[in-house]
Image (tube, rainbow, N blue to C red; front, side, top):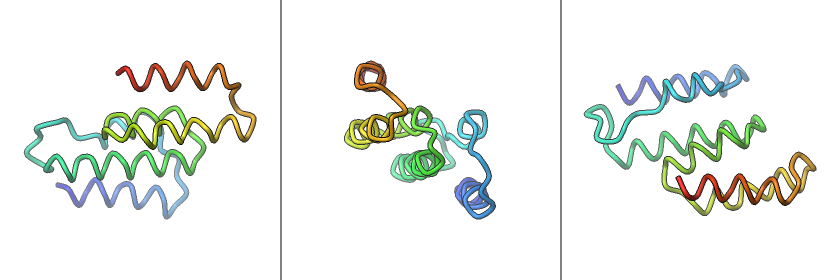
Length: 102
């Protein structure tokens, strides 16, 4: 089962397909799943987040990094939209605070 999640994500990358929130949620394995170890689950979540980040979907990337427990990437990720003018510092602060408290 693990291979299918990674293969699906790789197809999205190879074919430049947009990872929508629905697709990301379908590829998200719940905690305690028999299909993936916790380490594999976190790795998959981070790979999904990396893909979303490359596509400019900072909100979804933040959500997946948060689910993976990678708070450092969440903080760093929120610098990018400010740098590119997509968010004001106040909007980014609100989004970071919301993500870190979940």
